[in-house]
Amino acid sequence: MKILVINCGSSSIKYQLFDAKMKQVMAKGIVQKIGQDDSSLRQETGQATLQRELPILSYRDGFELILQSLLDKKHGVMKDLSEITAVGHRAVHGGEKFFQSTIITEEVIQKIEEYAPLAPLHNPVNLMGIREAMRILPDITHVAVFDTAFHQTMPPKAYLYALPYEYYENNKIRRYGFHGTSGKYVSQRAVELMKLPVENLKMVVCHLGSGITVSAVSGGKSVDASSGFTPLPGVMMGTRSGDIDPGLIFYLNRQLGLSPEHIDSMLNREGGLLGVSGVSNDMRQIIDNAERGNKRCRLAMEMFTYQVKKYIGAYAAAMGGLNTLVFTAGIGENSPLIRAMICNKLEFLGIELDEKMNNEALDKEQFISAASSKVKVLVIPTNEELMIALDTLALA
Ligand code: AMP
Image (cartoon, rainbow, N blue to C red; front, side):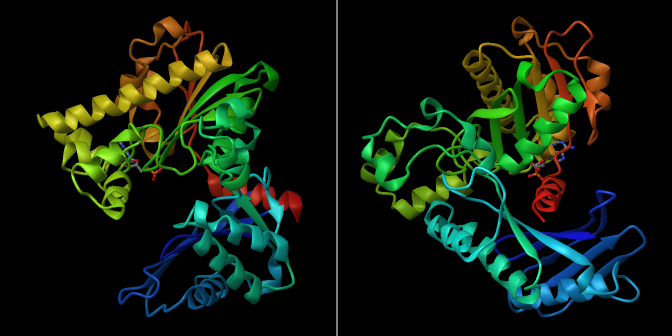
C-alpha cells in the first residue's frame, strides 16, 4: 500500500512516495523548471539518485516522468502503478469550506477554483496538478490537504478584520492563516512529546522558513495566526514585508506615484530580510554577513527576532498563558542563534533556554528549555508531506 504525495509549485512538482504501513518515504523527488530550457527531474531513494535533464514542457509531461521514474527498473521503487493506493495533494487555499482534508470530487475542484483569487499563485497550479494526476491515475482516491484548514478553528474575534461586515459576508474577506499543514503536524508531535492532556496545552508554534506563520494553538486547535487573508502579514519574511501600516500603500501610490503592481512587488518580493539587509533573503547569509560586521544584516536579524518575540507575547496573552513553545521550518529548526535571540528576555513569561541543548538541536526533535523553565521549548522539524500522507491514508 503506497501513498503518493504531490506538491505543485509555479514551475515545479515535488513528490514523495510513502509506504503507508511503515509510514516511511520510499522515494522523493522534484521536477523543476517546467516549460523552461533547463528542466530536470531529480529523484532520491534510499539506494540511488536519479538525475535527468530533459525537456519537460507541461505538468502532464512532468507527471508522466515522475511515474516513469518511480517505475524505473534500476532507480525506481515499484513495479506497477496499481501499487499506489491514493494520492495526497497539497492545496493552499480552502476558504471557509474546508476545515479538514477531503476526498477530491468535481465539487471540490470547483471550490478550489472558486478560491483561486484568494491564492492566485498557488490554487491554479495546485489544481493543474490535481487534474493531471487524476487523469493519469483515475481509479484511485485523490485527497486535498489544505494549508488553511488547520486555522479554521480560529474564533471570529481572531479572524475578522474591522472592515464593514458585508465584506466578510459577501467577499469572505477575513484572516485565513497559512502553513497550517506544518502547524498541524508540529502541534500534534508536540502533544505527543509533551505527554500532557491536549486540553491543557497552550502552545505557540513558530513556523520560521522563507514564509512565516506564528500561530496560537490552544487545546490542540489553532486559535490565532500571524498570516492573514494572504500569506503577506505577520513577521517579516525572506522577501515579504510582514505587518505594515496599510495607510502606507496609499502614501506610496498617491505621494510617490508607485503603481499597485509596483507596491505589490515591493511588499511581496523586495521586502523582508532582503529589503532591510540589501544582501539576501536567506537567513544563513544574513547571519554570516552580520557576524562580519554588516550593520544592516544585524538590523534585519534584530527586527526579525523582535517581531517573533512580540507575537509570542501577544499569543500568550490571547490564550491566557503559555506552556509550550515550538520552533520549526528552515530557520526555526536550524538556527540556535535566532532561537536564542527570540527567547532572550522572555524569562518573565517562563521561557528559559538550555544553551547547550539549544546549540545541539539542529534539524532534529529536541527539548531546548532549561529544567527550570516553566514553558517547555521544543524544536520539531516539520514534515508537511508526512502529514499529507497520513491524512490521505485516513481518508483512503
Ligand atoms: P524553508 O522555507 O523552511 O525551507 O526555510 C528557508 C529558510 O531557512 C531560509 O531563510 C534559510 O536561510 C533558512 N535556514 C536554513 N538553514 C539555516 C541555518 N542553518 N541557519 C539559519 N537559517 C537557516
